[in-house]
Length: 209
Image (cartoon, rainbow, N blue to C red; front, side, top):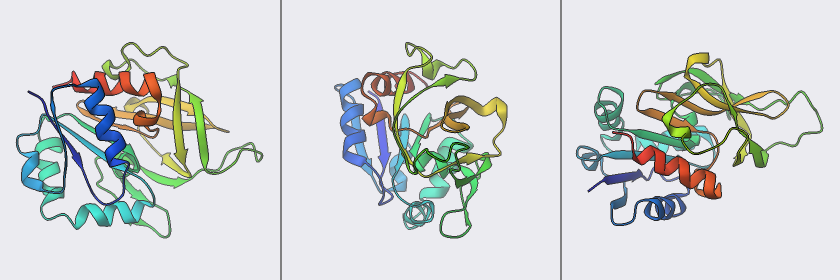
């Protein structure tokens, strides 16, 4: 049985994410957790995040031992990991929202305000946008290039390594939509709100490991 753990750092679409995971993995053990020790035997770990970068990082740091447990099981281990929205942004070196705040530093890059070249484009970037594939990856299986995913964000990852960008979208310039290295993945969009595309991506994630 898969043991899928959704981390509750106080800022996330937790129940929507859990519901989507249960939908694609019926009968599996899908649980929301605030306990670091529950990551030790997890087969898959998901970190959702909604709101401000600093608040999400502070919420994660308030969970005793959670950061070190993530580093052990994911960064230095092999447990598949998926960060969603701000949960993806937290993987980078730092974020510049209401000041400068350190991230987990698992990926090169910084989280900066969206500044579309087209001044008529609204911030936040909210709604559906077509995925542009930068490279092949198992997480994209069964999802045609150009498929639409649902975004809600005002900040995005910049200064990333090109080889770690799996997909992007165009919103007055390139916006990183999926980042990945090995078993560590992040999506700027919300799979749990992206209907068939999002459910397929979550299903692909659960085949990893």
